[in-house]
Amino acid sequence: MDTPNLFKELKKKRKKIDLIDQKLLTLFNQRLRHALEIGKIKKEVEEKVYDLRREREVLRRLKLKNKGPLKRENVEELFKTIMKVCRKSQI
Image (cartoon, rainbow, N blue to C red; front, side, top):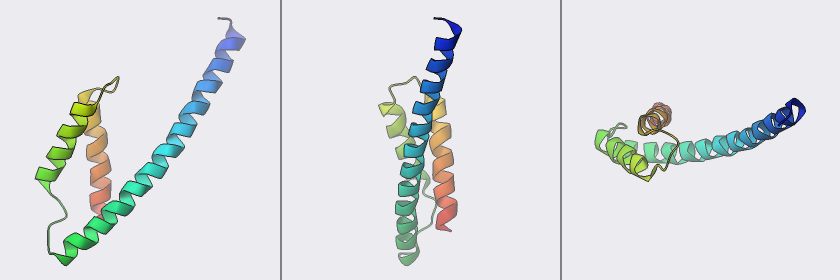
């Protein structure tokens, strides 16, 4: 492939990533809305925000469902960060 076509391809790929990023942002906000609702329920029933057993269960399930190319440890790192952000928002 010649250089001009490579730049066109690069631009096209970046545009696809931008669209995916927007979808991810929407999904992250949806997830946080649900986490905030869960936080209210936990407060009502006097349950702790952090549930290690639940976090481990979620991570295990996600790592099993992962088909790659994302590595298992990257799945864990990403979702631990997402869960941490949601947890902090529940406090």
